[in-house]
Length: 347
Ligand code: ATP
Ligand code: MG
Ligand code: FE
Image (tube, rainbow, N blue to C red):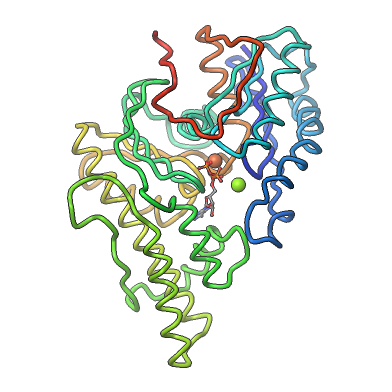
């Protein structure tokens, strides 16, 4: 079965085609970053309008790149939530309509299930895909969650952030440091030049049992540290790089500590990272090291499939459609939607 996937939950328009016979035949992402940059964050109404402009041209583009006509597509998958309601409506309405016009089934995909399954997409590029069961660490702009994954659709939430998501903390701290939006990758780059010994930020909520996260205090820590630098007349690129490094080390250490706890609690040995922050190099290096030390194993999506993309939606949709899951013509985007509400594939 060949599935065309459409992602429009936030500020990336992503379209891809995945099929068991052709693999990931084509995928394209258009990022709206430039549109939102001057506002320092995503403006929902502008996001919806731009998805309207970009989704159909991207669909034509991936069909061309895959060398396929519409008649070669057996199913449509679109992101149904969670995300911005206007943005979700664009992809949902378009995906559902195309499926109806083409006479093929359609399915609304959970955006975080898409992220979660991205490391399983056979692209032939990265290390082998993880086998079930595993623990997933979802680290993105809107989520920080540890999830026990028994199979597709069998998810148990082990812990999550009580305030800012990891990516959100990266972005807000980057803004404090004067870096352009979206700040995560820029902060990581600046941290490369930072002295890891200069500042030590706390590892929030690691001094007590449990696997929930809290990242909002770290940006305050960064703000106060920058304030001290300013007062003492030492504000410089190096000083800011030292702060970036202290922040990144604190986030990475905290994530690693909680992942170890989640494996201990579940008795599992495989940890699978997904979402935008899983592109972070220091996080990958430390996580791999920590897993090796305890006889576990860490898995990551290819770099291009960490942040939002259509491939993960095509793949998650393909999984469910080829297992026979079907939906009625009526569609209902869900801005808020828990992974635990998803139906398992095996009944
Ligand atoms: P969600 O998936 O929760 O709805 P989202 O779709 O906005 O949120 P993603 O596209 O998965 O999130 O990821 C974007 C986030 O990842 C941003 O916060 C961005 O700063 C962060 N990010 C991307 N690359 C890196 C990196 N190398 N280091 C740290 N953070 C990064
Ligand atoms: Mg985005
Ligand atoms: Fe996302």
